[in-house]
Amino acid sequence: QVQLVESGGGSVQAGGSLRLSCAASGLPTSYYSMAWFRQAPGKEREGVAGSDNFHVSNYANSVEGRFAVSLGNDARALYLQMNDLKPEDTAMYYCAAARGVVSQWRLLERNEYTYWGQGTQVTVSS
Image (cartoon, rainbow, N blue to C red):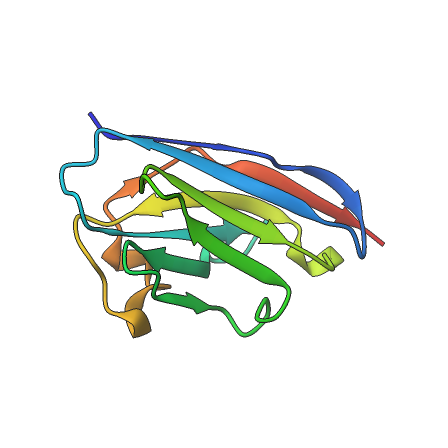
């Protein structure tokens, strides 16, 4: 059974930093893509950053240069370092894993991902 468990969310002031973690277990393949998505109240869930075992990555324009995604060496953990946070970053952040490796230009597409975590809340105050 696949499990994705996020942690590291919290409340920070604008300009602050947070590091999200996602622990993965039970994934059926050795090579796969993982990504972070977020959903603010009343908005669609959107891709934030994704990566794979080959360290290919992709970022949403809104977070490029502020966020950094990385897959753990054992490929069982996904991280998101978030710097210079802004109030518009406030959302529930979800970890997702695909059944295999996703093309770089599709790393932020929801439909590519089969497994999802329960989410961790990030709140940024001005």
